[in-house]
Length: 103
Image 1 (cartoon, rainbow, N blue to C red):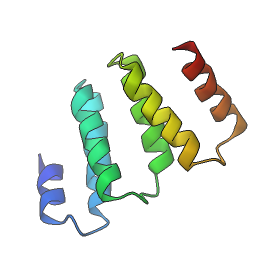
Image 2 (cartoon, rainbow, N blue to C red):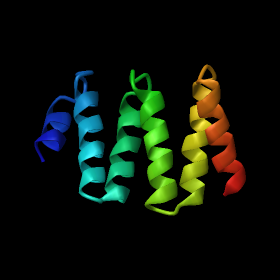
Image 3 (cartoon, one colour):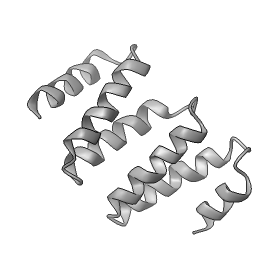
Image 4 (cartoon, helix red, strand yellow):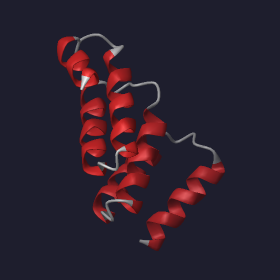
């Protein structure tokens, strides 16, 4: 994919984080959920201060829970979201707590 190529060639460029975000979204659309999670992890590894990190973690947790049925990954992403973004809206925190307790 052009997104992978752009990331590979421009890893040090912060704009490459947008390529990875787009790539993980495309893999979700193609129902390649494991690949989506893999590229999410790559984005988080290379760009730990990514501006849309909270949304990315929420998306990864939801993907792991609903499509991959992977409770361990779901817990990892939800707990990381709660830990790294303590100022989430009350409703979001309650939803995450409910999902963690339910699983």
